[in-house]
Structure formats: structure tokens, C-alpha cells
Image (cartoon, rainbow, N blue to C red; front, side, top):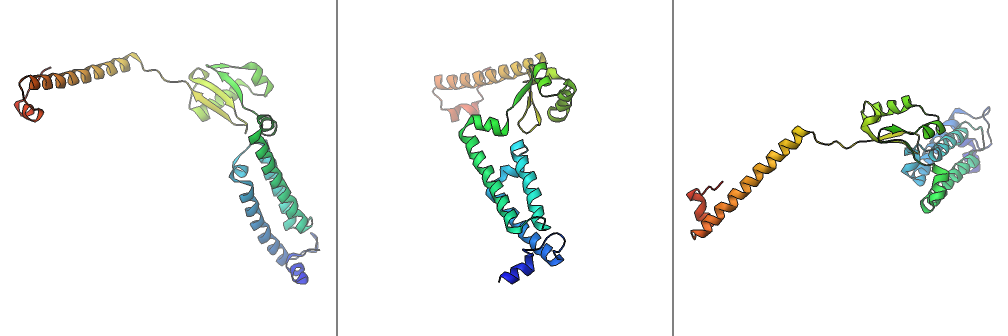
Length: 216
């Protein structure tokens, strides 16, 4: 059995002596091992772009590629990858339990602009310019200027997000809404008056409607 495993995976081979068959067998094992580690680490690991997630992705790619080409011991490389994933899960759990750990590991969100006014101290601290803010407004908020933004954030993954200002209806829209409300009120008053007249005449609603009582 040991000889068969050595023949298939080249357990004692290095990058100069490994054969094509061994490379293919190693690639298959590493592929399924990577899938298993992905399931173990959770979907957020490879979906997130925080420094916390990027470290795991880069390190896993670097370590597991060495297992394929026999640059490092095969079994030890897979175990090292497992340790990285378990460490990631442990820190994720600690971040959930402690806001301080979450801030330390994943970073924090910064307010870059508020009520259309940029925050120079934050921009200077994060090495951003107002042109960077305008670019993010164009790309993410579909806005032409900072005056249209309620807040601009630098998220923990390095992306810039925009919260638009609430749109207030203009005078024409308010007048149109008022007319609609007034028309609805008249219709409701007319219906109530019709029912009142029918009640005064001692008619049921079904008898009053065919008579065409209209009071508006």
C-alpha cells in the first residue's frame, strides 16, 4: 500500500524527480482538499475582501500549490492548509464574540464625507483625495457631486460606498399629490352622503344604488 501511494503521489519525490502521473494525482487530491477546506471555512472566506480574508486566500493558494509540484512535503502541506482554515474560523468566532477583536482583525468603517462635506482629516489619514471620492460617487452612487451624498464610507474591505440624500418632492409634485388627496376626499364624502340619504329614505344600499343617488 505504501509503495502504491508513493508511486501515485511521489511522497518522497521533489520538484526535480516527480513524474507527470504523480503531478496529476496530487492535483486531484489538492483540488478536493481545497473544496473541503472551502466548505469548512465558510462562504464568507472566499467571498469577502477584508485583509482578514485575503490573508487566508493568498496563503492557502501559495501553500497548496507547493503540494502539487512537490516543493514541500505533501502531507505536511495539506495539514498546514488545514491549520490556516481552523485559525481563520477561530478568529472569526472571536470577532463575533468581541467587537474589539473584530476591529483588530477585520478593521473598521470610516466616514469620508457627511452631508456633502468631505472630512479632510480622514482623507489624509487614509491617503485618499477628493477626486477618489468623486470617482466613487460616479461609480457606486451614480451621483455627480458630493452635495447629493448623505454619507460616504470607506468599508472594511477597502471599497467606498455611498448613501444618497433623500429626495424631497418639488412644489409641482406636492401640488399634484394635494389635488389627488382632495379628489379622493370628495369621492369619499360623496359616498358617505349617498349612504346617509339612502338611510334617511329607509332604503338599503342595494336599493339606493340603482336610483342613482349622487351627492357631491
